[in-house]
Image: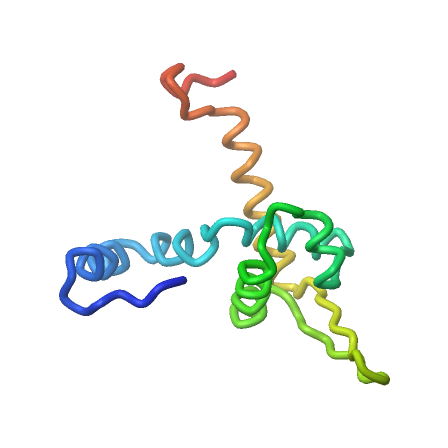
Amino acid sequence: MSTELKPGTSNACNITALSLACEVNDVLRDISPRWKMQILHKIAAGVGQFSTLKHAFPSLSDQILGKRLGELVNDELILKVIIKQKPPQRINYYISDKGLELLKVIDDLHKWGLKWSLSADGGEEK
């Protein structure tokens, strides 16, 4: 999660209760930070350098892009490859097998969302 919660707060208790009720809540919390899935999708499409990702998402700050890339690496959804050359060194990001598998699930979720819009129409099939 992006910010640390103080133990004993209502938010911390709620997150614990949701986690104990169903692990899906943990997964959704881990993949839901803004920009995370969009960045993963771009890396899967071959956009694998910080500068090209920044160009793909011009309103995304460098700080948040760096943070999300770090989270994706820590989650093992992408691989970070440092290409040693004369300074400045180059870093490329590649989708991992785990990341590809997650994108299949996200694509299915997207298709479900298109079919069953949860808007004011009552969620009827389109």
